Length: 292
Image (cartoon, rainbow, N blue to C red):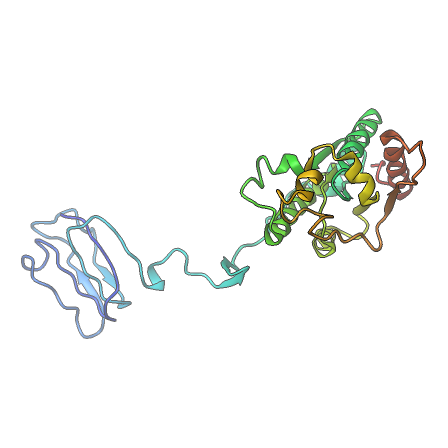
């Protein structure tokens, strides 16, 4: 018996099978719309064990091609309701699968509460330096952390994104979702990235329970950041070799109601990264995040 190929043409069923009901001629279904295969066949003894009925869905052409095209909903495994998100279709039959171990259980095991420390500021403001100092200080206290650095994430998860506005938004969205998972595990997640748009940061905040998103603003003037210029990016931006650089030809929207502000005072002796990290830790202690 040769292979079958099915596709839609008209709302009826007919077939052409060598050896089934008279050579290769097309067999038309009965008027009641059901097609009955015989229980046995001299030429196709393995075709069926019992009578089989097919209800009329669409016209079915049977050929010798070993392929299947299901153009009609009744034969499609993806026959589900759909909605559009960002222009893409998304199935709405996806349900959340609850775990037998809840967030509270994991936090009790770790003796800490999961949260997201979101460090935002201009390039050169010291975000990554403070994030590293914070991670080390918490580690020394026996607390489990993980740092999502903006540059590091673009080496893997977000390597397909550019620095255009829409891609920057997607960059933040993805990091926010990953940070949310870390917090749900019970880990203190430290996200360190420019995240220039207030709307995007607020979207990440909305992913977490109230209080679990701790926004830390590195309040350092542009002139100071540009004088540091550790990567030479400001120089390139001023020369027009980098377009859309935050602080030069793309805006940075400072937080309005962040939890922690690490402000550059302009003094000759500035707070060390460790001192800044301790300021954040004090906030976490006061809010009970360093307890199970």
